[in-house]
Structures are given as C-alpha cells and as structure tokens.
Image 1 (tube, rainbow, N blue to C red):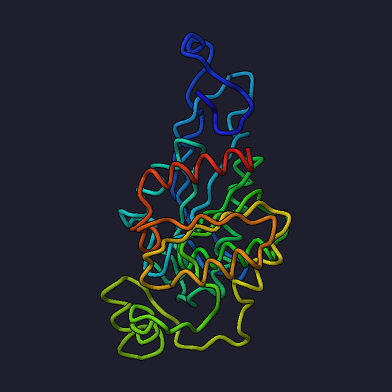
Image 2: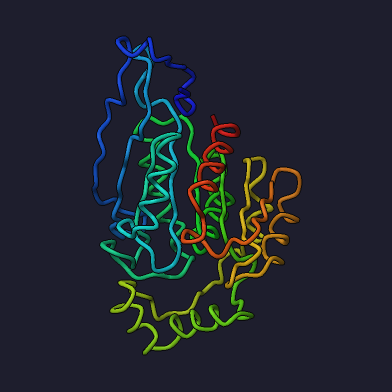
Length: 279
C-alpha cells in the first residue's frame, strides 16, 4: 500500500520489517497568537511506514470545519476517518465552537486558529501539509494560504463562498439573522454550541475571491455541489476564474453543501488528489 507521501512502499510480505505509525492520537489545546485556546485533535492515520524512515515524514491533512461544526460532530469525524487512509489528520474546533474558547467571528480571525493548527502539524514532523476547508472553513483555508504563503503544500476548499455578505438564498438569510441579531446569537449559543461575537468586521477581511488569487503557486482544488442550497454555482466559478491555471474546479452533480453533502467517495477522491499534488 502507499504510505500517503512518505516515499516508501510496503508489500504484504514486508510487514515483519515494518510497523504501523509509532505516533498515537492525542487531544490537547493550542493557543493562537491572540491568546484563544483551540481544541485540537491529532490522528497519525492508518499509515504503514518502513522502519528505516522517520515515522512522521508523511502527509498531514488539517481539516477546517464549517460554521456551527466542531471536532466532535459526526460529520467532522467522518471526514477525518476517510482522510486518515491517506495520511495523518488534524481536526480542531474554531474559536467559539465546541470546547474552544473565544467567540466566532464567522471567518475573520479564524485564520489565526488554522495557522495555529498548521504550525502544530508541522511540529509533529510532517513535511507536507494539506488544508481542507468546508463552507466557512473553505473561505478560511483560502485566506490562510494567501496570508501565510508557503506554509501549506496544497489547499482544498469545499462549498466556500466567493464573496462576503451574500444573502441570495434562504439558508444564507437565516444565517445572517443568526449572526447579526441578539436573539439569533442566543439560538447559536444554546442550539448549535456556537458562541458568536456581536461585533461587526472592522476592517472587512480579504474576500475569498481576492484571497484565491494570492494563493499561487500552491496547488488549489475548489469543490462545489451544483445543488448547494447556500451558495449557487456562480461562487465556485468566480473562485476558479480568480485562481487561474493553478486552481482546479470540481463541480459535483447533485451535491449539496459542505461536510454533510461530501460523501465518502468524494472525500476519497480529495485524498487521492492531495497525495498526487502534495505527496
């Protein structure tokens, strides 16, 4: 089987001379540069390494969940369970979500959370890092790649918006109510375990379309469903156009929105793409 990027191949007859990863999963808290504690889970993955190679030299995926997600949500764990076939996996909860501290800024300062997770992934010894973001997380991985050039080896953005303040669909109008109204933030806190900051963006962060143009030459994959109820297909097409030749667009027939709509087959294709581009 392939080791997901470590550069060694193991055959069944080689098993006496190899071992599964010597790393063990762990859960801890990171602290961002602005002092927010972030719930962090590291899984070394179901990878077999040749014992002559360092155990942590392969590929690691850093998964950025969507708004109202967290590391314990079943859909986030399912994403991690598929990607771990291709390498190690880092999952974490954005600020204001789950057990992490702080309050959600709905994609603005979350780039600091991702930066902390990527840095810790590098500290585990991984030479290649791929960020995989969904919806809000999809916009965050784009901004992170634009603002932290060279820190990741490939980027996958799934179901991301192309522009801020979009209210063209009913789900997005409901989301704006959740974020901007005091009663909406109460629903977010007690209904979705998401604590939302009451302050508006100041300044407004780099838009996804502006960010994607700054991610080159890092390999970029944009994935979007043609049945996405939040962001119609003009969003991924705008992102792909801004990306130019270094970006690739997968417009998935019948797919809805984000982690819930990304089936195991699609996640496996994303894993294959990541290995081929970053491995």
